[in-house]
Image (cartoon, rainbow, N blue to C red; front, side, top):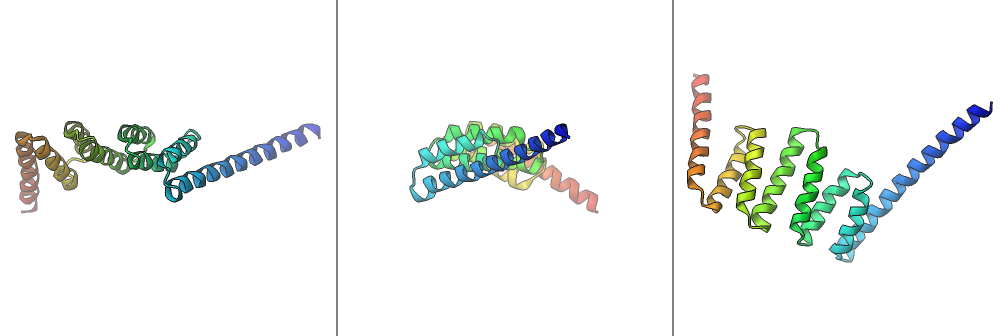
Length: 168
C-alpha cells in the first residue's frame, strides 16, 4: 500500500536525480570544451573542469590535466595526474600516468631529477620494458648521470643475454 508507493516514489526520485546529475556533468563538460577550444580561455576551462572533477568524472581529470598543461600550470597538471594515479586500477594506466608525469617534469619543469625518480618507479612496475628503459636513459643523459646510464645498459644486456641463453 502506502509504504510501497513511498518506496517507488523514492526510487523514481533517485533515478531522476541521477539523470539530472549526468545531464549536469555533460553540460559542464561541454562548457569546458567551448571555453578551451572555441574561446581559447584555458584558465576558465580549468576552473570548469575542476568543477566536473569534483563530481568524480575520470575523463574530466584527464582533460583537466591536459588543459592545465596547455595553460602552463605544470605543477597543477602533475597534481591532477597524481589524483588519477590514486584511482587507477590497472598497471598499464598507472604506467601511462607516470610516463606523462615524467614528460612534464623533464620537458616543462626542466627537472630531469624528478623525472628520473618517476621513471624508476615505472621501471619497477614494468621491469625489462625497453620503451621505459630508453626514456630513462634519455633523461639520465640530460641529467648528466652517465654512470646510471651504464648501469641500465648493463642490466638490459644481462636480460638480452639471459634470453639468448634460454633460447639456445
